[in-house]
Image (cartoon, one colour):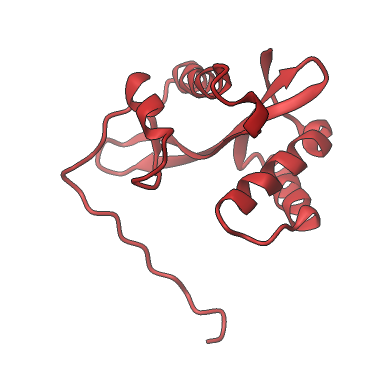
Length: 149
């Protein structure tokens, strides 16, 4: 198994993984929408995608978005997506993808990598083993714009 940085030519390999990731989070399957979304992120350099490959088979991916901290005046990544196909889980692929994200952060001289996950996500134990610290001092808020306004 190896982890590569994905480019636009890898979109056919990433799309089914990205769609399965979204379905895992209870979204309707939408391969065309997933493909279009990924094309835009990669075309405009809005994200970094790493792809785990077992030979010619794509078995997992992670997607990082670049952002900034005004307080520290530094750039950092948000690890927004991490997915490994079920038959490859518990084989170290998630760990390899997370470590690749950390390497990318160091390469870019960024502040760090943040992520958000559900409180019942079993991957949270992996995050903690690999050095992510749970923030118990801050609340997370989100405002949703109505599409009908």
